[in-house]
Amino acid sequence: MATSSSIRIVEDGFAVLPANVNLNAAASGTFVATGLVLALPRAGTYHLDATVRAFLGTMTTGEGAYIVARLYDVTAAAVVPDSEVLAHQLTVTAGTSGTLLNWNRTAPIQVRYTVPGARTIRLEAARFTQSGTTDSASVVSDGNGRTTLRYERVA
Image (cartoon, rainbow, N blue to C red; front, side, top):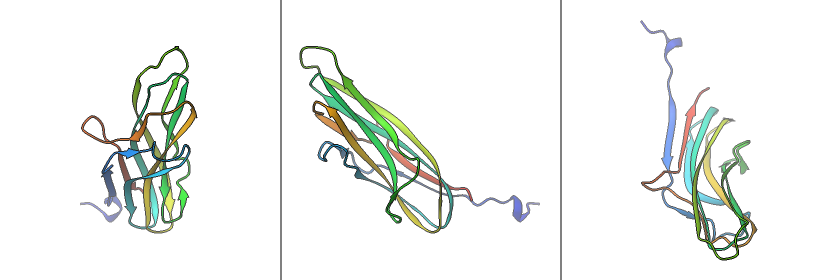
């Protein structure tokens, strides 16, 4: 017979990025809300996990750029501590003529987050251009790889 102390009620949530997000439209270093959002239902400690698929492309040499993704607590208007990840980096330093490079990468975010009440959490990303010009920079989700966000309440 199960006792009340052996019963664990799992609270969790999962979402997939609803549409690809163009980071090239924003200025370098500007975080963009991706549209991937989850609602934490109540106070507690949560494991937050994200899988971020990022894309960078250039047609020039001398390019240096990267994409950073993070979780943002919309309710508290603050970045979720320790949630920042380098999702993708592209550096083209050799060559004398234009080169077409398109790179995809996927990066995980895994953090433990304690909140005093219900919260809304969203995935944000920014492109940082150090040199040259990116032709494309985006966070994507399709049949070749998904960008996702998940929570599980653990306490």
